[in-house]
Image (cartoon, rainbow, N blue to C red; front, side, top):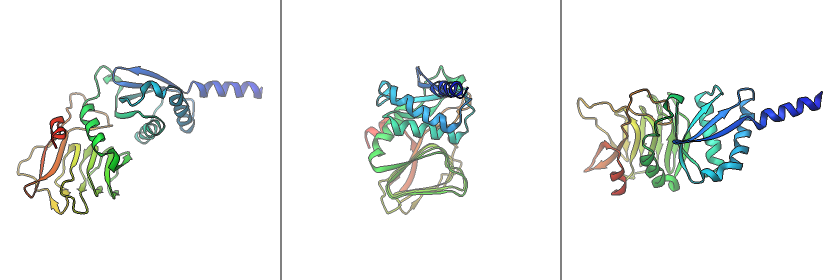
Length: 242
């Protein structure tokens, strides 16, 4: 009886994760009958066998079958990226599977620009959180009002930036702050604070979060020009000629 139970448990674990290839990247079918810790182990094992198929790929990801919290989603993404050469750029909802992940090209350019001089933080911050890096900083998630992110180099937020952001903290005026949505006047580069123009419009976007139907992305970048911090659209041309 114990042997039969063991075999049944092994079958459940071997079927804990099914990887499917989609037009936007990877779709994971997750077994809801295993613990999350077992799920993480199964994901590592699965991608060890099939990771070469997605080698150096920049992809989106979607999940099915397991009720994941946002923190668990980010943990799964971190595990996949740490055990493969895959770069995951967004989470797709089931109803969005026919559309490609937006801004993949912009994301790839930003990641290429800072990867060798930055640390990555996976997950959204909470009000009151503070995050500091002595090099560049990439936040895969949102920075809400009341949170603070500081980097000695460039600062990239793949999500909504509503809190305080300080790049070039040690006096680097060439540093930049980029985010998929910047809705805050609390932006600083070096010793220069951003002064929002009157009646400035709000830009809405988001990354590694669930995009609402009909919502468009408006990535923005803040940089120093003529002694002032300016905000402008974050485009491919901007990065190619900077």
